[in-house]
Length: 212
Image 1 (cartoon, rainbow, N blue to C red):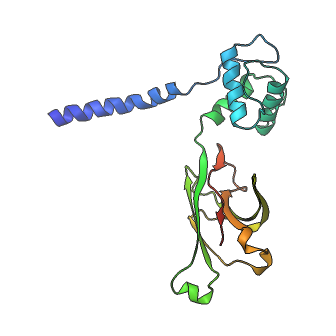
Image 2 (tube, helix red, strand yellow; image 1 turned 90 degrees about the vertical axis):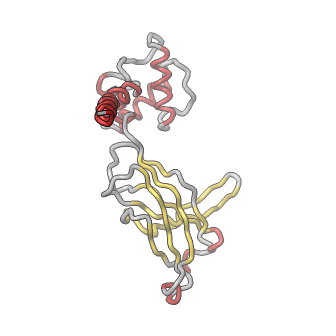
Image 3 (cartoon, rainbow, N blue to C red; image 1 turned 180 degrees about the vertical axis):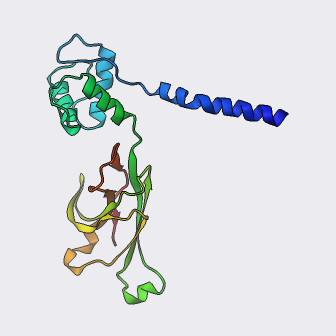
């Protein structure tokens, strides 16, 4: 009887979890536009979202002026909405959809020499590994060869794709090409697919890994 009581209590708590979780997501419900007659906390929240996503280039101020208007326009264009700069119902709905989504992530790269029988055929052969989180099962990844051109600040230039939109199985075999130039400056990164339309944000959160 005690086990049944515990089970019923657990099921009751589980049933409450979605309502509790959704209550933690602060949705936008106020229309706002250019000028000072806007609720400052709501403007700050909107600006923080736009700043985090790269649409707004300055820190939040709480004032909905020209820079915020331009940032809203940029967001509207990204969502196929008429770029008016007014944060109305259509823009609000789009932002609530985007902000409520879980971001996909590519990280955890490694590059190593292939060992065992395979290495007999080519001592240059490399195995590339990576990890993904919240990643769609039918989305691929891009494996890029890049070159470091500066240490301070750290800067890279794109050399070529090792694999484009390849299967996201966390493993790829690659043989370096002599035409890629100075191997001491070559790095590899694995990034989100550019051929797949992610419902939410997809970010590259790892560090490029040196080939040699």
